[in-house]
Image 1: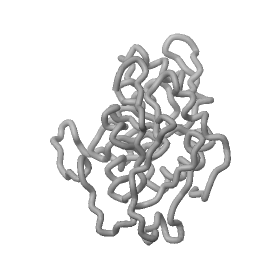
Image 2: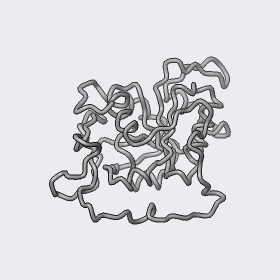
Image 3: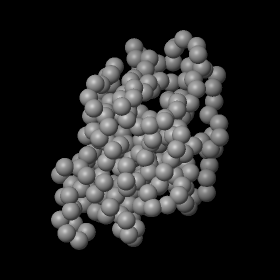
Image 4: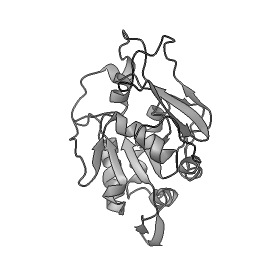
Length: 234
């Protein structure tokens, strides 16, 4: 649900990651928008949506320049497949696929209240170029059972250890996972790893459009002044 604002404490969803994963620091910078009147709305009657992220109000709106075109990495239409193959809408059994309005609602209703985490499954160098406001960078490979620190990340996500590689996720937050777009399998691989670890399907969501669709629609992109990676460098 799209709200005008949300007053609940939003810091939990980022604090739980401070020692285990890549995170969005407090110095988030919005990429510039044209200064014209807001004639390009999110939906009819809604020009912008506000969400509290890491204790700060962030406004999500669309680029008001109606002549703007997408440039850079996401202007490409074709990439070699494999590995960049088109992903299905329902990529993981039981995991709901969502689009942009649901992403914004998730930020307002769950990220802002500490009951959900927006998970950017891309590599840190892509995350550093810009991401969806409020997203936390957990590269897909870190969730693989082959990663010796995988269990630490699951604990940071709110799992309760049951011994060995067994966890209770009943108290873990909902996760909305995305990557570069419909041609990238990074978020799908992250979701499959989470499911294999026992994360409940009903607590997971898949934004298939990812950063390419987000930017095609001219929606706000955030950049972190500093991106840090636990156990390594970006």
